[in-house]
Amino acid sequence: MTTPGTDRALVDVQGLTKSFGGQPVLRGVDFRTAAGTATVILGPSGSGKTTVLRSLNALELPDAGRVRIGEASVDFGALPSGRADQRRVLRTLRARSGMVFQSHHLFPHRTVLGNIIEGPVQVQGRPLEEAVTDARALLAQVGLAGREDAYPAELSGGQQQRVGIARALALRPDVLLLDEPTSALDPELVGEVLGVIRDLAEQGWTLVIVTHEVRFARDVADQVLFLDGGVVAERGGAEVLTDPQVERTQQFLRRVLEAR
Ligand SMILES: Nc1ncnc2c1ncn2[C@@H]1O[C@H](COP(=O)(O)OP(=O)(O)OP(=O)(O)O)[C@@H](O)[C@H]1O
Ligand SMILES: [Mg+2]
Image (tube, rainbow, N blue to C red):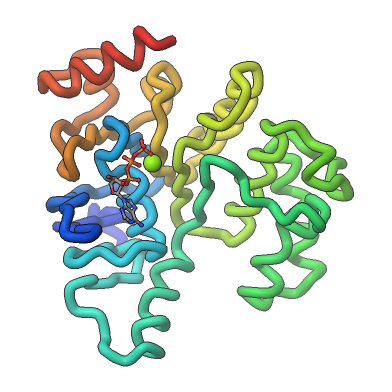
């Protein structure tokens, strides 16, 4: 809940740093995201995009920096020393966001419905009936009404990815984090998944999306962050994608657009 009359961002990321084996990967990443907006992160391979998303979801532990989502705030440089306390703090942050990965990670032996209700029922302890009702509504939202009894192997890659989105939304997160949600798909399936994400943006979901789909990004992005070498090298609105000011961004966009 935001306090009326303040413009407190829903997501506030400050000074994230992270090294892997002595190699700095994040070197002070800062950004804020307002509720109901879409933030697009792009940048070269290895620039730290996935590490940023995983840090927001506390799947990765930065060496320092803060992440606040809504009322849940974690200072990664000052985590509680006890394991149980640390887990509790990280859990409160993790509960605020839902993650959609490049490939969907659905449970192959569970139906579509089983996949979607697993988190709400097993992790959040919500009543089965409520979780099922919610899941049906979410399936309709991602264009898969009536497919609740299918198994993942019976669905196309695009349909599986849409189930992955429904599964993340079923946890009722404040913000949905999407890491290259279409890059593992055959080209003809990309559009249907981008269409679903576009609908979510229009419905006012708060989204943080790593994508190289520049045309899609231009349509949905309220904020664009160009990550390079573990820092935000350029930021702004969608104009960053049409009229980048920083040379590295210009080069990168040229390369991405030429590759299409
Ligand atoms: N668990 C890990 N252990 C060691 N190194 C890692 C780990 N995770 C990421 N890295 C390294 O950190 C750097 C940034 O990785 P990250 O996955 O965040 O990049 P990215 O921008 O998402 O790249 P891509 O576009 O290829 O997905 C890379 O050099 C990567 O090899
Ligand atoms: Mg990545």
